[in-house]
Amino acid sequence: ISKPKFHFLIHLPAFIRRFGPAIIFSTERYESFNHVFRLSCIHSNRHAPSRDTCRLFTYQDIVKHVATGGYWYD
Image 1 (cartoon, helix red, strand yellow):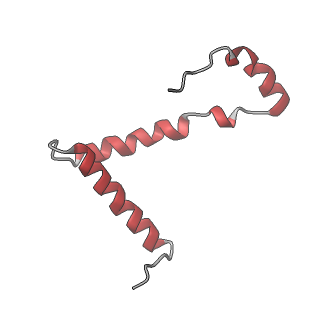
Image 2 (tube, rainbow, N blue to C red; image 1 turned 180 degrees about the vertical axis):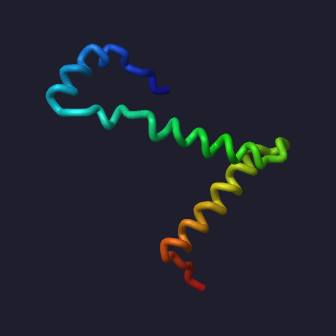
Image 3 (cartoon, rainbow, N blue to C red; image 1 turned 60 degrees about the vertical axis):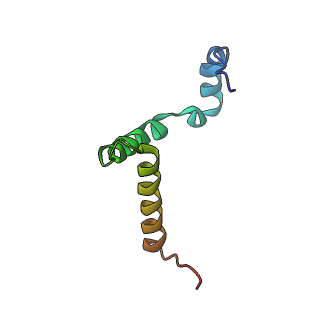
């Protein structure tokens, strides 16, 4: 189990001055992904939301794979 280290926040301003923006600690990218999850739940039948979400992500991954020039061997 991972426990956040709040003591690190004391040193964060000094690290930002020394190394620049705290990109590693940015959560906006992951929080924006919640929108994708919410949209996948809208199109769910509510009986098996995990299965529906996985199927949607699988379909999106297949489309992305083909759109970027990927292919499968026969």
